[in-house]
Figure (cartoon, helix red, strand yellow):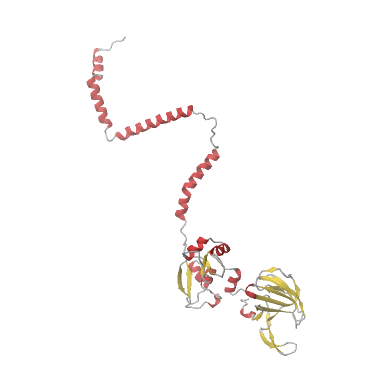
Length: 345
């Protein structure tokens, strides 16, 4: 065995002597508690503990029976991860970005200025035209007057007047809203409603018929021509005797197309000595329209027709002095002046 030199042996004994070791550990402890080294030491200890835990878990898994366990495929795992992310994050994002909608209707007032139109007012407040028509009970937008005070709601919808036998659930179902929506919008304390009560139906719209009526477009011209005879009393063109004329005579070339003036149903078609070939259409609110002296009928009884649909051709059949259309409007069987209902041409 090789012997150390005496000087080296003395150095070894001095380094490993109890006094030297005690002093060395004291210096090491002082360094470990140094503010600069302490975080590093703690970090190393943490890494050591994690490593030990991983090794322990690996040993446990190695001993477990995993023969019946299968990991999902890569695509499935990705889908699971995406679903978990969307479930935890998307609702919060949507909640932050989507503004809360008002639940209860509230009204502000607006005084109509000179040259205002209802369409301009609706665009100014971001409210639909039919909403303003309904909530203000406007029968004809053309009669909007300067100084008129309009009610402007904070949401779109229409007003419904409760009829006898109606309830909230039935109204909600008919309008495609929930009972809760109706209760919230009208700030109701219960589901009890009474006939004549006005309810605001959020999101609902006026029917095409009611909207056209308010806009002055309920009745359109069935043909485009000059008027040879107005509604009211006149001299009979054959006898000269003063008689009541229950419609408008509109002169147009023979064979010109005749359009339905209002949406409706074909109530009757036929021929009479007075009106020649004729069609009668039925419409809501007891209205009927008459088209007479036609050369040809192009629809059948029972058909539904849209406003503007061609239903026949102009002629001079029946009691007639030449090609023209006799156009009549009746409400509940009583003749009404078509000129008061027709819109512009």
